[in-house]
Length: 454
Image (cartoon, rainbow, N blue to C red; front, top):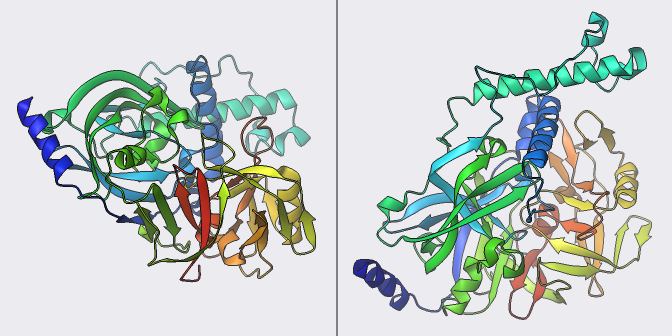
């Protein structure tokens, strides 16, 4: 115990107030990988079934992360935890506020179906073989709807069985870096349980306390509380990340944990109470350089002069008001709420506006993929957002996103049905267009043009 205190004291005394920068790595979204392999439709069926499974299992949960999906998280960075350091690839996420990584005891939360497999849908009637070759969109037009529903459920059962078999040897999160508390000289037991639910499942386990380095060999925060995930939703097995580092506010943190970046400022490790996000151009190359996060100051290397600051409208997320949206001859001047979210790969907004812009650029909604597909050669006007009386434009290169070199996705989608939260989520296409300067003491967010054209 004395040795632990001496090591923590050493880190505290030998860290000076400064500005720190960490490069981020971009990975191709899981969605785009699956579309390119022509298996995304099956993934959607599986996802729907898994989501239903988790909704029933965690129906009494108090905390749900409402606006985020694991498959959307594509920018990650390296951090370390413990002494000696144990390294992890994490999403730097402005839409959440907790840090968690897989524990050495981590397992994937997969419905138990192996050996004593029991289908999730029982007593299904037999239907005509003709209906079996139809997908669940066209089947109701040619077959009895009840029969189609049965075939749809049988397909889900088959997918469950296949997925369970495929992952039966990887229940232990072997593909992830895992934190081993017994190998850290500075680990302090906390013991409080934690659980965070996402759109496709949850991460849950218990909390510990240790030195967390965000860069990963500097900006070391002694005694930071973090989550050690002992159970992860199976969807995490298909993503390259180990965990998530939340950069939102303490008011939304599970167990009221102080987020690492705010802890760093409270300990006088940062020059200013800000961090700057710069995201590079989106491309087809996986795990390429994706930009940088700068803690404690402005990113003068990658970002130009600040255009303006906007006061936050909520002390929970990086949420603020926008005064209008425009595209070509269309203009909507209604004030609405928005959040800047590094954990969302697209921009989401009201269905009416998203559909209108999508139709204007000739985009077609693929019902099987649940995605707007657009001509990769499309060259058109920017999408404008008015914030604080200033117009911020997202150019076409940032909202027409290549999937496989032949197919492109329109960078907006709708989230109608959400009765709570912001109307707009300004995800990566907006952040690639403007550096984001987050001030967590003044409660403002600023915007600056990147020096390199995205």
